[in-house]
Length: 221
Image (cartoon, rainbow, N blue to C red; front, side):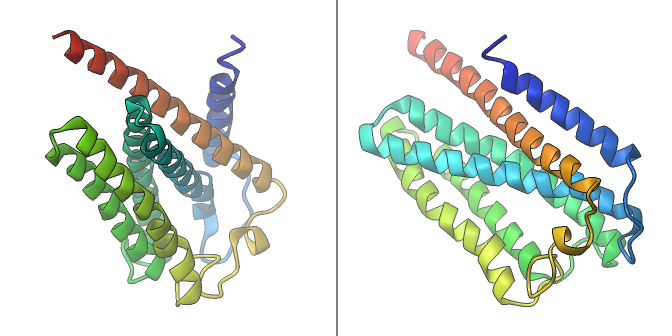
């Protein structure tokens, strides 16, 4: 039980944020209206994705330092899990954009940057599948992963702040915290962020365990 406290916390935080997201009170805002509820779902997905990609980079560096294959497995499973949250972020964002901006995929620097970053990490997974030799695959993909992470940050966070963007906090726009989220929403929002990050790490650990079992089974065969 002591080792699983964070999993219980993740389940509680996500459950509470989902209930509050659908049933809790929200401020009456111009243009956004009830869609502000999506901030409990859309934004935490990106936080979870970013955390998982960061974990992947750390273990890619560790693998290059000592060549432990377990580090390579953690790195790729963190990306695999991060991609799931990436698609969830895109889907919730498209739904939100369609209501507030009139189209699911507007011409926006942050939206386009997110799409490019997504393709970049999908290319990482394709690269791994094209290389058969284990050590070669691990080394090349680790180097790719290390370079992909800062490029992703530039595409999704830095460039949108330097150019025109419809997203809050980019292109000179105010952030959600400045105008849109009241004191009732903030605790739920932060709980959702922490809960989904922990859930992402939880899924990653499960995938890692499955990958280890598959590796051992292949070695026995």
